[in-house]
Length: 50
Image (tube, rainbow, N blue to C red; front, side, top):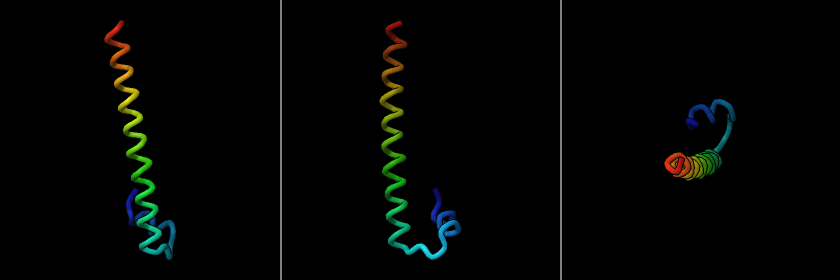
């Protein structure tokens, strides 16, 4: 997600609102990347056991 895209979609968004939105999005992305990494590690372990 890019700031410019958000500003185009939500005209009038304040800098504070935009920062909050970007922070929340970043937290979501980080959480899902960690989850994907954890699942990949489990898959690798299961594959190795086979």
